[in-house]
Length: 310
Image (tube, rainbow, N blue to C red; front, top):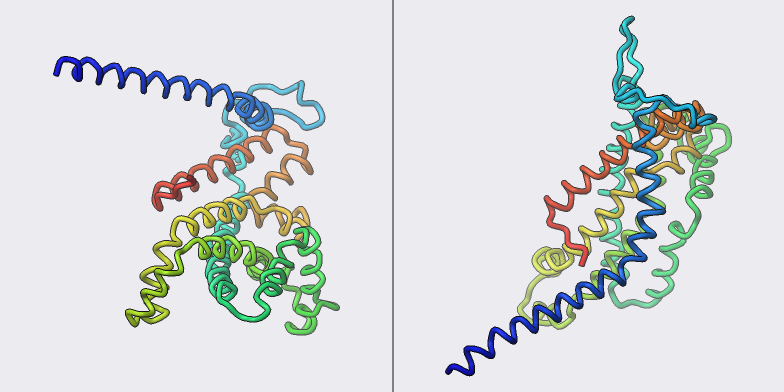
């Protein structure tokens, strides 16, 4: 009895010592990666936050002066609003970006699910279909955006001239956002289908065989078995696509130009302020606001849906 009582604490101490040694080893192995992340991501982020509180010009950043929150919100004695949060174009960009994100990610998920269920079946030509569905995703975004801009053209475009009878769809802000959503859905649905297909192929086939023997319909199998088991992979795919959609830039810049893109996407507004207007301070403030908006949305997303990335 006495021997067992003295041996057990020693085993616990030994186990904790091994775990601590493994933790230290893992930390040393991760250290180069953490240093690389701090250099390539942490330092630019810190400089952006630094200039967000400065009155700085892109051509002469060394002359920056401290202005506090003036780049975010400031009203002069004459009642003129200077901060970007008082610019209606910024709020229009936020509204359009949110609309673009919600609608495009929803449609891509629904269509991606349908395509994944189809190509997950067994039929002749399945391999060819899997390869063909990746063609829109493989085309560079700039190229596909320019291609769709030609198709939307009201003078010679297949859609603008042929289907809409000469209507300049991209020149009307209320309709242009839906045209851009259609382009993004066309391009990115295959990516969502690929992610969902990978999740479907990880599901055990014997489970469906047992359900068939029990007489469960295909809809019941999908609703009660496939969808719950696919939920983790589906939520991870939704998080990544939502992040991409919130940061959308190239489609809107190519199809609308720099001025109209500034009122259609948050990144377009940041680009116009920082590059075209050379306002380093205000452009950095806009970038910080975009970073905070995306971070808050991701935290809400991950917390509400309990997304696990392991």
